[in-house]
Length: 429
Image (cartoon, rainbow, N blue to C red; front, side, top):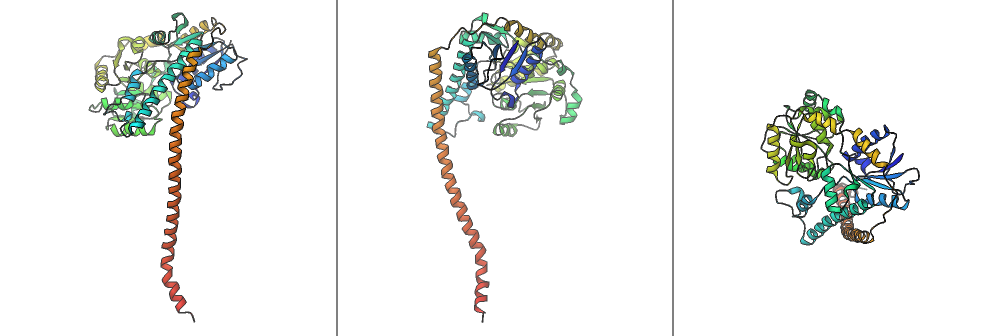
């Protein structure tokens, strides 16, 4: 059996958790004699493949292109959408609070503020519209949790019989890190600290965690790259001396960090199910998870939930997790229930039941999505024109300033020479 996997368009460059999960899934599928190929080419010839698996619909624009390519070539389509509600995130961006500078829109004029709010809403609507079209087309929908399946059923009308749960797995090697090595390598003064393995970015709510923990002395350690330099600087400015930024680390050092930590926190605005929590849990950490996640489903009472928009909720959940005894049964429960082999077996069984495409696109839904895309394009085109005009005006000023500076340099160079030249001329015979 040959399967084509379409991930997010930039997944191969950004190498997020979804790509790592996909690569682990493919390795496990190959052991079951299922050959898988990864591509981000929206015009790829699909002749060699029996069907297409869209893995992550996080980028709706590329997901639509990939789905239409499968439809054009009459290939069955399945998907792992990796979806969770983003309502709280959208509200935080459209109605920012004064103490959340990462969401601040104070510097905008009323016209700019209205335009930004409309863009946020359009992005959300396009994201949902793309999901609706692809979920309708898909022969099978693979979800990371029963909770995700319930959301897809409630919000998009996906029939339960079309759903199959394929939770993320975890590498057992994360249970065997070296705590003392991590402390020495990164100069962390004590073990049993609070750890967050995630990108340092707005979606992961890194700044919210830092603010929530500002008056505590237990070290707070971040492991992960910081793709947004401005956001990272806000985090550094808000951090006390007990906050450590270790940057992106290889898996063996992540395992070391998990072995040294007492609590792992993921207070993201939403989290479909972070692999980092599984890795920390198998190492024995107590877990704090955002309420916008299936944390309880994965980890039961070993997981302490928090509201990402409420710093006191994040603080209290971390404190409770620090004070709670370790759940000695959690690592073995994770090891038994969350394996890539189990995921591959479920996929292989469901793949065999995939039927040829029998559904066509919903014309009304496609028209609505097209109109939203056109409105987004018109808003951004107008803004780009404004930026281009500003850049042209600045370029004119820069050239004028360079001309003035050159004249000043010439004047400063020639003035000291006028006296000696005049004297020389007067003394000539």
